[in-house]
Length: 116
Image 1 (tube, rainbow, N blue to C red):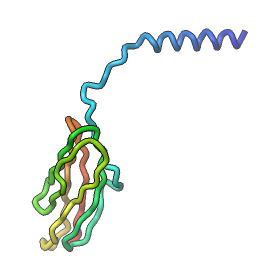
Image 2 (tube, rainbow, N blue to C red; image 1 turned 135 degrees about the horizontal axis):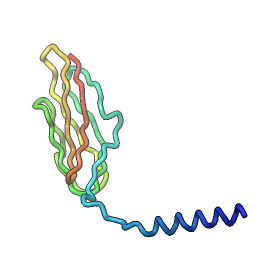
Image 3 (cartoon, rainbow, N blue to C red; image 1 turned 30 degrees about the horizontal axis):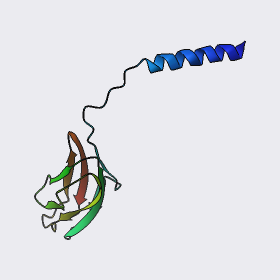
Image 4 (cartoon, helix red, strand yellow; image 1 turned 135 degrees about the vertical axis):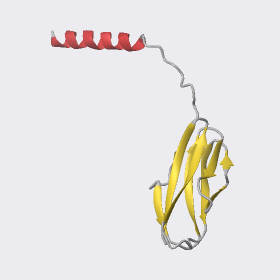
């Protein structure tokens, strides 16, 4: 009797699940930063940080701070390594900066703190 009840419950669940309409996402573009952590600390000297991203379509990268720049600043679908370049910190204070990666309507941000 218990087995019959389990079969009936399973059949009802499958029937209800198959009645739902599947909808394709309106924005299939996505981007992810594969390098972790997403926030790092760097010395005051000039330097670089390699970051690996995965994108499902064309993407762009924009530095949000004048002392950072990224190469390449755009790319195509797939996994790619980009390099974030940072100038020497001569301000006497720690500073924070970021680079935003965009694919379609999706964004991911990599944050960098540079010591004094």
